[in-house]
Length: 415
Image (cartoon, rainbow, N blue to C red; front, side):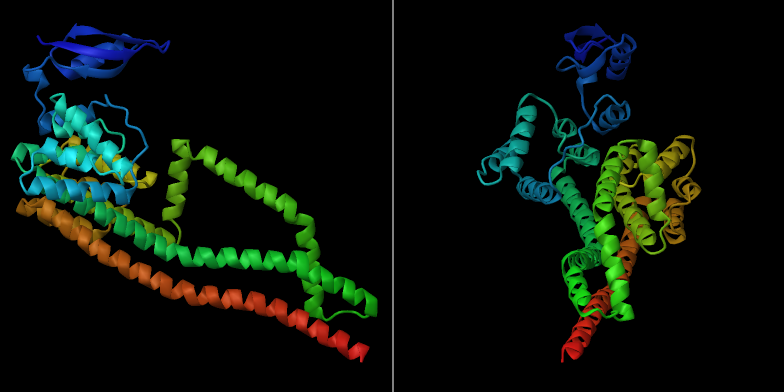
């Protein structure tokens, strides 16, 4: 049996290191966990069979749960540029270590350079690029899987091109969703700030003016004065309640059950929920299709896709689908059982299973869903923009009309 070197943490927090004999790396991990230790690193002796690192080994490594990944990641734009640079260099035949050295030498991109330096150090120690990527908290889990597939085929440049395409597609979808929500949110903020300013500072001045003329103000002005008095009384408690609600939400978001409930409610919203569901489904189809096309086994590809999805409801659905696939279910049946995927996407996956080309059909489903996302985004913007303008105009215009009418009445009395 091979002898594995390890570093681990005891329950007291003390770090230990040593060697143990086990059949596989996973067995070594399980023995350390059974002894009450938390494995930090388990490595096989150089040159041993257990130390070889292929795509299958990477999938087993991911699925073993040995590596606890940090949630800290590079900004999407930085990661895309890093991947594009790396792909361009690797695609022209530049050696991996040389390509990483060139990226690390860029002085104006410290975060990208630091990532290249860390990967270069790992490669220099004899690790494969895929394993070095998996150990990086700044890279998503599927990044290493696609790299491993490229290593198995001898085409790392092509694997990096595929990764860049996935990252760019994901960023484009996120930008489309942000653009759909940004305008109505900004209008809401402007309306709230404008209304607050008028009720807190402008309307009270007219109240003192009306008290000097000893005349009952118009009905609209009376409503405005009542709203101003209510606002001045309740503004501070409402602000404190809003801050408390935000703090409560931020703290509760750490609870997986709360996040799952919250995300399910978001998906249930009439217009926004449909758009969010399409966005997440498009991400699932496109990423899963690329992983399968790269040669990753379906269960591991499904798990990596699940880790890349932000909506907890969709992640729970993918977890159920993953378990169904492990039981022997087909992909279309496993996805259909979740109830989260549109019929068109499921039908394309079924066709892919019948023709033996699931990856192509998943990518086609992703393209169709992306077109639907773009159409839904344009429809939402086209609907929300005029409604927001009308609401804001009515709010400001109503207040201005009440104030102007009061001024004219006071002027008539004075005349």
